[in-house]
Figure (cartoon, rainbow, N blue to C red):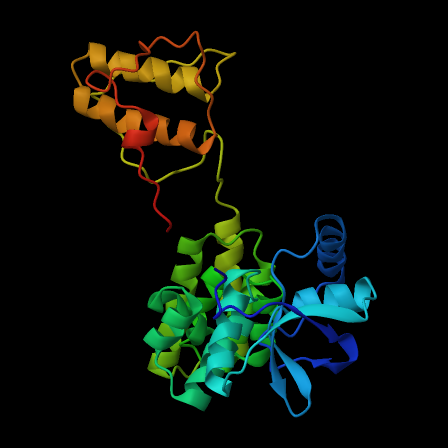
Length: 323
């Protein structure tokens, strides 16, 4: 027996289909062309969802698919699932569609949450449940709306990392733009270096310093330039990692890759009775193998066994966290 609650696709004239208030404002023509070719070759896996509205059909979910079929393939009839629904239900479906299929740009996503909070009184938790994401992600996106609009634009188009942008949201607009200029001037800007720079900007803001902004910017720019002179690889680089001189030295041959170095060092630590240190290195080794960064060589010196009582399997021991 067929499910009577699931609507059957209907062929709707393309001229009668209109866009809703879509959270997605930019549609990449290259990706639309790829989607259209996929539909042409493999047919349509999931029809767009529309709702009747004022004699037309408003898109609730699937505007990319509609555009691909109508604008790229030139179809005059579009297969759609037609459903009656109110504004809030349509908005919830659209949010889940946009965050679940092709990621919105970060600020677009933030505006999508904010629009629903303003219009329907949604909380952060309600937005998270509707979108199928964590509340922490929703709040992180909403914080981006504290950025100056020009900086939001750079985040949206990928020219300013979101990880760096969220750290300047508590600065005023002038210091946000100063931070962005310093970011662009730097040869590199790892996150810890960025945190230190933002901390100085925040302290200056809280102190309501009397130093003219251009002088403050020059001072910070000189500090950033000096940081760029610090070597990040080679014998003069400083990792900050603690060293233990009581451990056996790491033995490296000219032809070595990472796998035999780690493999050999774990064996050396075990031979020295330092099983704890060997286990720590083994955790890193297993992670590298799991991620595909290192290949276990058949010539490696560690004994290979499938016995979990002797040696932990990679898929049992490696826990990869999304940081």
